[in-house]
Image (cartoon, rainbow, N blue to C red; front, side, top):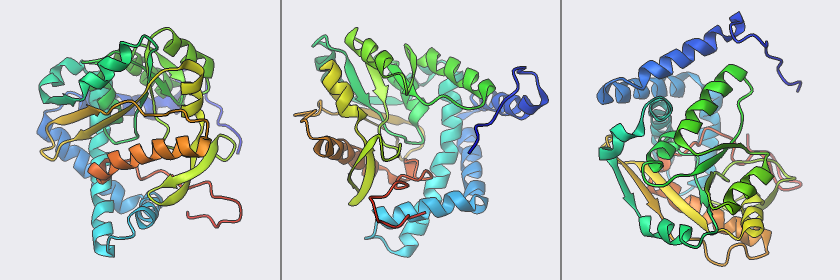
Length: 304
């Protein structure tokens, strides 16, 4: 598929929709909390009803990962996932467009001692983040307690990329292109913590197959490679919206043990086990709308 070509002039009519979306995000960030929740829920329900392709992907993921649930329970979980991710749009807007200090009273941060112990080693740290609907707001809330850089995927649309990157640089110390391995290693070796999310399917060449919710999933090898190149502790981080829909919990677990082990499959399995543990706390808040099992082992039929 040919890559889209975008106009150089950011005032070009092709970007008017993007500028409108950015304006809505900036306005949405300052809405009263209850209105944010109501609007996010409405967006989620509309997406659940009309985004049939994404709903099919989500239904497939739940069928694979939660076979113990009946059809009615899985259907309810699909609906709640769309609602949570709709709210996540307003949470992302809040994380990008507002000073996180105004949310300090909404945050409980557990396991702080684990991160303090890791950083005291002087080797930096690699933070395992997860693609929850609260991802970008979680990063903003994390910045209230610990500074960190972030690894991210640049957006194809240059106007939205500029907006997104500027916002993330206001939260994190540096926003590093996911293809810039040297940049990641350099920042960690200089004593920084780097937030990295290894829970998506990046294809066969970058991955090994390791179990995720009991299903063989293409799991990237880069987490272990970065840890091996830097000697930095790998820190599992959980973050969720609490059931009251008004507060958030962030929690560090102890650094992964015997990591990297030298066995790519064992290392990917250890990372996946943590991610699964975090997801099971609030499964509806995970980004199940993406094709986590897109790449299949040789000879195995596609799921989507």
